Amino acid sequence: MTPLSPSTRPALTVAPLQYWWSRERMLAFYAEVADSAADTVVLGEVVCARRRELKLADWLALARDLRASGKEVLLATPTLVMGEADVRLVRELAQQGDFALEAGDASALGVLVQAGDVAFTLGPHLNIYSQEALREHAVLGATRWCAPAELALGAVSRINPVQAPVPGRDGPLVTEVWAFGRLPLAFSARCFTARHHGLNKDNCDFRCRDDADGMTVRSGDGRDFLCLNGTQVQSAGVHALLETPTALHAAGIGRLRLAPTSTGFARVLALFDALARDALAPDAARDALRELELPGELIDGFARARAGMDLLVEEA
Image 1 (cartoon, one colour):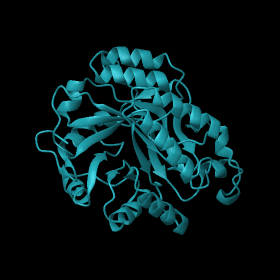
Image 2 (cartoon, rainbow, N blue to C red):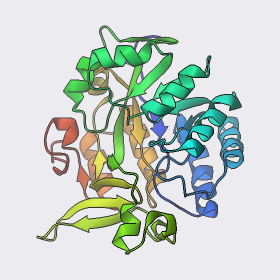
Image 3 (cartoon, rainbow, N blue to C red):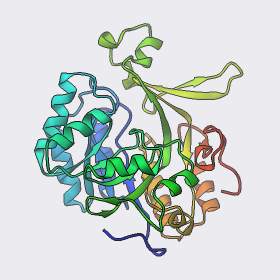
């Protein structure tokens, strides 16, 4: 792995699906991704262990199909490792040997390090907010990292600067940033969706199946505020980081993470591919995204060191 050059096209990563879709819908979605410009696909259930539409064997079969189509595939560990069943799953993932992993939390990271020679990346939910923290994680054997979604571009560039990137397992760590999708804000051992419906987590009736993009929560004045997605809280708005490849390179960013939505995602991938190739201007990408039936308004506040729910500015 070599340091970024100004001519390098930022790679596109499809983030793990955050919602509970039917098996048929998931397989159709990933068949579409297989024919897209995506470079990397991260697979696995990262929100709630009760969502078992696909078992590990199914995820592995899907991973092999995507790899056969030319995609790099990572397997994600749960964002919250809360019990022995979750620990066993992380161990099984570490033992499968065919695909590198994305560490979802510190518990999973500990299991991966103990497992020995396991290739892994650092997921966006690890608490890495300084260069010192990134170096501590990198020496454990990481190959790249995805910055926390709430970090501004300036902070990301200081943590892993393009002029002197933090060394990783295979060379300089490549930085990935959350570039599209509802922002993951918090996770809990409790299920917010179940509570909304007057149910407890263990008897939730799997009500999150009814919300293909989560359940929007509005403030007292009627403004879209948050999104409930099982044990996860997300932004109501859809984050969209629309930057030129030159600006991304200057910030040390080599990868863009795009989170699936229930509609329009194939078009999203095509637009970000054109943006990454410098074949589409950011303002044109913004206008094209606004034509899609996305689950929320476009926002970009966190990337600009502002309130996360700030709407995407006209000069994007």
